[in-house]
Figure 1 (cartoon, rainbow, N blue to C red):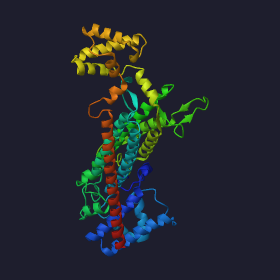
Figure 2: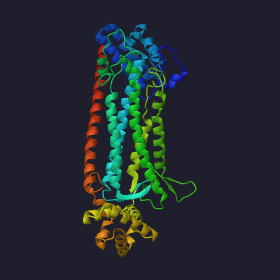
Figure 3: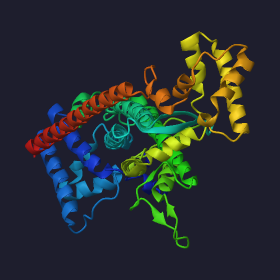
Figure 4: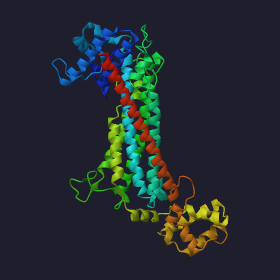
Amino acid sequence: MPSDSGNTLDINASFRGGGRSVEFLDQINKASIVMLAETGIVPRDVAQRIAKGIAEVIENEKNGKAGFAPRSSADYLDYEPRLIKVAGQEASRLHTGRSRQDIASTIARMNLRDGLLQTIAALIAVRESLLTKAEQHIDTIIPAYTHGVQAQPTTFAHYLLAFESALARATERLQETYVRVNKCPLGAAALATSSFPLDRNRLAELLGFEGLVENAYDANHLAPIDSALEVAAAISSAAIQTGMFAQDIHAQYAEPVPWFMLAAGELTGTSSIMPQKRNPAALEQLRAQSSILLSEMQTMTWVSHNNRPGMFDYRMYDPVPVGRALQVFKLFKQVVDALVVNKARALEEVHADYSTTTEIADALLQRAEVPFRTGHHFASKLTDFGRGKGLKLQEIPFAEVARIYEEQAKAKLPMTEKDFRDVISAETMVFGRKGLGGPQPTEIQRHLSNGKIAIKLELDTQKTIATKAINYNLQLSHMFLRLQ
């Protein structure tokens, strides 16, 4: 934001617009003149002429009247000459008790809350797709990994719902942030209010804010930083989770036959030289754009860091642009919708490794009170033996299983061959889970149900906020028209 000295440098041009800044300046001007007339700070007849001038400037710019090209700047010093041109010098009374400082802080908050609502809606749409896809794969067993190594089997639904849970927290953070962002700084003037008795609460009401940033110094010089940082942090968290998802799915393309991949179509591409290749272009874009989004969200941290309050650096009218975030989350939704799972191939991958051996130690403890560490050592020795022989877990002869246990535990294996084969079954392991939040169908159904309920409540909240915004705009328009 340019300083109040009147010195407008070219370097400031990029900070004058962004988001709906020009539109928001018009709303601020309308609210200001209504409040000034109601309080008697500006005589009603003068306020009427100013209001008519504000409306005329908007109309002239909308219709492209000579000398009134559409504004690209939300800087009040760029706006005021246009108003004076149609309403005379007395129109400068619109700026009574105001500063470009509190105008800029208010525009920034209006952009922040507008961006928050758009981002929340985009995240909810992704989560709806994750729930829908998960519901289709409650019994689809897939390998899961820790340290980049196959660890245990789970279900594709369980995997997808993990990301839905993470994005639900990101949504919650944004919703909580909205409450704090939706406070009005207008009327704070430069940093200490003014000698005019402005009704700041009325300004907040007319502009649809739920309360004030009360301390005038804070309103312009501290709150703009932490509010923008909070928005950026919540979006950053979602960007990281989005990138993790893209990378995880993309890793499957190293396999000749991936167990989940993108359906052929606009999200995939063909090599210009290798006709057999089907490149997962959307996954690469999702990962790359998530990383770029993350870097953009760090901007507010760096321009605010090691700075003095009130400096130009962090005073952007649109401090956290959400355009890329909306594109990233839209692409994320498209990727989820396009995912195709090869159930047989996924189960084959589970069977190709030893990820069900975890269940051996648990079963020995549950069925025969065998100490967990004894069972763990046995399962580890069994794994080493099988891999050394080039065998899959299911291919190890039961006689060898019993021998290795007896050598390890100095006791007879307390399982029949049927018991053992059942224990190492991926289906038994996955669907026999008992813990809260596991992949068993009852827990997946519970998560799906809760997720749908949560999304409905969030959509209802979004609708309520939108309705309030419409009502506030109607109220402002009505009061402004009455003033004219």
